[in-house]
Image 1: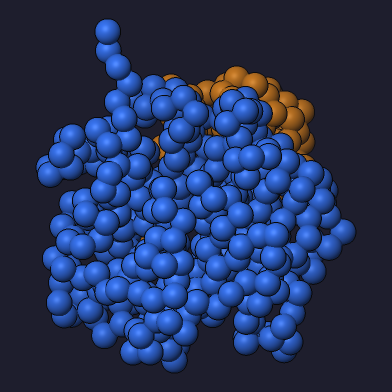
Image 2: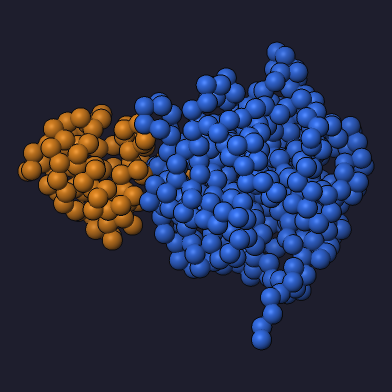
Length: 376
Length: 86
């Protein structure tokens, strides 16, 4: 009788979402050789593609093109065939807002198969209860009387538009959720999205008139540890932060990074089993924010003590003249032992480490601008 | 009436470059098109009922700014997608 493979044996597939389509990068059991397949949705801007850990075969991809409106494609056979959502995320008619693109996808709670959440640009929160076919706005956020104040306007976002991202569902309680917005900050709901409150104390917002504002911050990426859901980490516009609930004041971890590198970046990823271990990919946030590897010397930084100290991990990466930009969804980990860590660049390269960041290897190159990489 | 479908939307029409649909206005025509080719309307009309930024619609070779124009059964509607960006 066939037995389910443990996390230590499972093959890994990376879902590589790019500005020109979707690719899959699959490895053998040893994670030594990788095979690139695709593209799917060639010519579509794919902001995110995520596999459903609840069934191991459903995948959702958020797509649009430069000239057609945004949509979501669904697969129930691990990406072999795709069907378009019957009702993609859209704001309420009469709200004067339109979804430019769906930016972020999150599978719902384990107890609610078929439930998914989507975050959009401009900031909107949407839910599907049927595996991604029909999407409805989460009115508790999209119609909240404070929404306009929290989200700001077109000037309060990234060059590619303001975004709602980092939708986190508490594995202990499906009603308990977090979201993050660039800009807007981090928000928490205890009633499945019916109401929200800001959760930004301790986060510096030195680009705002009030650096201690209640909201209006710019979290780039926020993660919840799967084995310790009270532990949150955040890579923010102003550094790296950690929050241990039920506390509501974030701890600034940025000062522990080398000053020559700084604490600016977009992604943060967590070890799947050890809440003390995390990785970031620092980028230059000086002067006009080049958003490339500081000095053209790319490196991942790992902490194994919850952000108290960091180790540079650059073995195998180019030593000089490599100006990598890694977007907030373009870094991930697998569930294997030792954990594989992966990141992808806007210049179309996918890099991977099968030894928790000690050594790196280029797994794919010459792809289009990469927005996201997710492991399944 | 005849509707001319641009290349990027032909995945919805099984590759057809010309289809037929009905409607007393352009808005009604778009709803009928969506009934026949599900999903097509939202790619070109946003949730507030406006023609998307990079899409143009022509009725009998005349550009129209919105979905209000009345249509006759003999009219020909052309949908055009701009190929924006690199």
